Structure formats: structure tokens, C-alpha cells
Length: 197
Image (cartoon, rainbow, N blue to C red; front, side):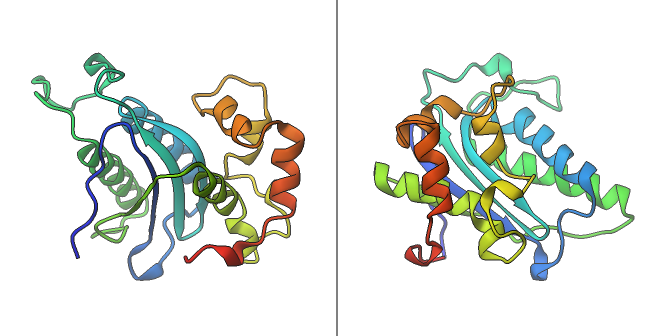
């Protein structure tokens, strides 16, 4: 089945899992490195609103920047020649390939780490966007890892409530929930049964 093209100026829920549902994160350094690569490859082309990294899969809520917002000098190219056009899907491929290569090298493994192609769903209304934020942060609850979204370390939940410098669109996320109090309340009272996946 053909996957939806990532278009400029639109929100997407991006997610993927390990090949054959196998692990993609093996220790804390892997989670940190994934987020470092996310910043390197995805920040130039998209804003990150929420994320959650679990042992064998991950979820991202991103907004592909408009063409006017993109600065080609922000991109890290592996060759001397710069790309003539920016393709958001290619940036995600570079990101996932870089992570796979690092994991394969570190753990002496071969082959694909992630299922291909990665899943993406366009988000077209604000209510659905809020539901995706809640879904992403409550994913560890859904999978029985924690009993509350605030107990899981490898998600954007705490970063959104923090005042430390971050590239996350935390103000925009909190605005969707009106304030921090409602953000916390909504997460504590979230029912994951209302989303289809």
C-alpha cells in the first residue's frame, strides 16, 4: 500500500517499530542517540511537538515546516554537494538509516532494524491533534510499562512541563490544553480506547 507523502505545513503522527517487533533500543545511550539524531536530521525540516520511545517502537508528533520556514544551511549533508530540493520523507529515511547503522555497528548486527516504510498519519483537526499528544505520552501506560504518563522517562511529557531550553514546541502543546494544570489533568484522565491504533 502506498504511503502518504509528507507535505509542507502539515502535522503528522509518525511511528514505527522494530523489524519482527524486535527491540530497537537496548540501553539508555540508544534513546539519547536517537533523540540526538532526531534533532540533527528532523529539526531542519520539521517541528517536534511530542515523542515517546519504547523498547521496540516509537511515536513522534511533528509538523513539517512550510517551505518558507526551511533554511537549507540548517541541513547536515554527508557529501560536499548540497541537495537542490528538500524532501521531508528523505530526511526521515536519513534519520532512520543513521540510527540503524549506529546500532548495527555497536551491537555487531546486520540488516534492517526498523520496519519499512515508516508509518505516518496526517492530522487535520485540533481535537485529533490533542488526542495524539495524549496517546503518545500514555503509550507506556497502554503497554503496561507504567501506571501514569508522568512516570516514563523517554517521552516528551516532562520536557513539555520543564523550563529548560528545548527545541520541542512546548508552548504550542500547552496552548492546546490551555495551561499546565489542564495538560496534567488531561493526561491523568486519558482513555486510550478512543484511538484506533
